[in-house]
View 1: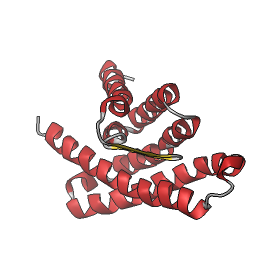
View 2 (view 1 turned 180 degrees about the vertical axis):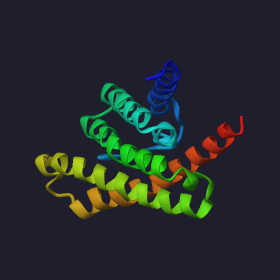
View 3 (view 1 turned 135 degrees about the vertical axis):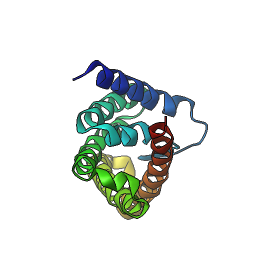
View 4 (view 1 turned 90 degrees about the vertical axis):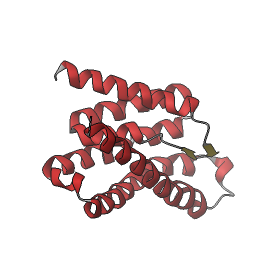
Length: 170
């Protein structure tokens, strides 16, 4: 790993840890949480390389472990799945980054992978918590984590794409 890659990873991890602490737009409905731009560092890392995507996913998950609930930290750790798959796909199809139609399809595809992974890691927390016995799995996990997370992922992907476009011109 080059020093430049290590530095980029460290900066994206730091940004990924700071965003949930300082972002004014947050919605917390356990087990779901929506913090505007929380996924942006991971998405940007995905456009750089698979290794950086993995490192940023692990680093930001550690940040969530230190500052949030175990459920949210597990959701953050699940980002390694979509980030790795997405980064490998981008590496194989780099032309996709400059094609708006392909980029939109990619964002939908990667957001689906994102929320499926999050729903999988949240399910054991939901099932094992007796206080959630009266709550509907469909509403809490599929609705809040799934549908809500899908929209959140699309928004954050759009922000990351905008930033990537601007940075690539520098």
